[in-house]
Length: 172
Image (cartoon, rainbow, N blue to C red; front, side, top):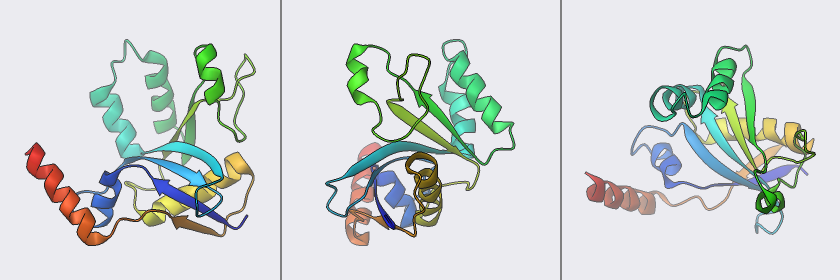
């Protein structure tokens, strides 16, 4: 496989790409091996260092999420450029949601149901930085050397501008 196809799941990413607001620092992506999205590869939640710092300082209750906060701090204080955090099945219902690709197995023999990708490689996400992280993900989780990343469903500039203006008019 020489190409992976990516769908960015939030409009905020495109608002930043087109310069309507700051670029996003947290995005969810879905990866496919074909342009028609018939062959799902996986999905990932991408977080930059700035996003992790903000979440740690403003969104997470350290008492309720001690283990996760410790994991984030360990990554932020490490020499790693990319790290991963995994959510594993919590009950029988979650078992069917395990990722279909390679991933670390927990002590119960289960794969994760969700993967956070933590990156110090860029301050925020744009098309180039997403391409870079997808090439890393392709190696780490699919054992693939990807030559090309193609974005799916890129919204046109004017449509994105209208969407941004409508969203922010409602929320101002």
